[in-house]
Image 1: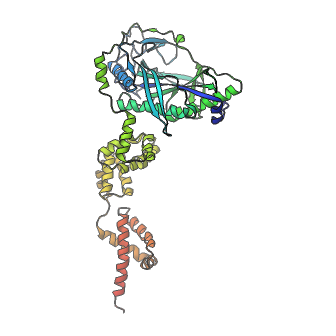
Image 2: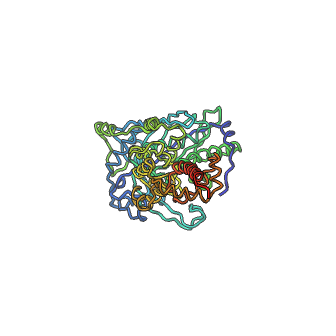
Image 3: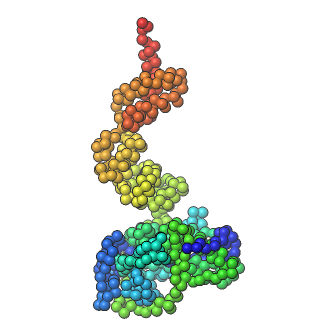
Length: 510
């Protein structure tokens, strides 16, 4: 695939104003699908969670999932939306192999939630208010896997496989109004907005919000308006971007690509585009249809959704603390500077860190272990940090360090044992014999042996060159297999160096 010509980003912003829009698709974590009783599970065997209804077979009639309606209302409320007194489903008609019914059951002109607003804060401190046009309910499509070819894409594939397990999974699609005035912050606005949506749905508990599993996906709309013009440019829609970093990169790429094409005298095609994470480029998909092309008409098999105002207010009362307010509270409570706190947020460790601190761990120690050794092990294994160890286990590990049972070095070995399933931190300490040696007796023996084997070092220590004690300390720590407190070893080395000197001076001459 040939790489498009790109214009320097700063030069593109001199010539054009970027105009943005985002459609974020949130998969709800209901037990069953939107309109049938099939399980809503990720990772099941292909085409095992299907039935006549979600496959669109004759005689299969849909029935609305009440929990999906409730989750959609709560999400709409959290986004500051009005909740419609009545809304209804429609058929969005188009053919695609992963849509077994040949239409998507969605909402068109009567969405469940509308007229919302979300304020986000960029790393510079700039606040941007994003107006939300609507948050409507629909069902998801299946998943295509392209076999053969070089990179698993449809271009060059020998054939494609379709898994309809995801077909019919409940979705909420959140559509923004046009975002103007983004300027150079356009890529970061995209990333931060999607991150804020993801944070909200996690706090509400309505989605697993794992972008790597497609629970949260973003369609990024980008167009360029020439400086000084009031005429909007033609937009492109980069589909199904499923990581925060990719949203940022895709927006930047489209700005640079479109600017280069326009200044060369070309035109922008209104189309969907695909983001390629490996090469960092977008490629053309299909011409983007307008609403009329989908031939929407009301779904004849489903009655309108009409939530009572009392129910809406009951659901409003269940909303959690807004994520932005929660972040500010936690940072103040923990005493983290901005860089420390941002490191936790960027690592997606806020929830596990809060739980670890609630289990009794000091805030700084909890941050150190989660963003340090645990994150390193998780990255090496290609899994999430919270999948390796629980907050309670980490708090127990930190307590053993605090009370002197473990050094940091020993604690790393204990952590490995906990992850390997050998038990709690205390059980691993006992089974592996990893506790710090607290009896000075074995330490003194090891120190005397190390001093005796290094008389030149002993002489230097006696001459006041205490930094020379490092060689003896290292030898002792090795002899004790790391199960000694280095600070205590240092104290004893200096004491023994002096005492052995005094003992030698008192020995009678032969």
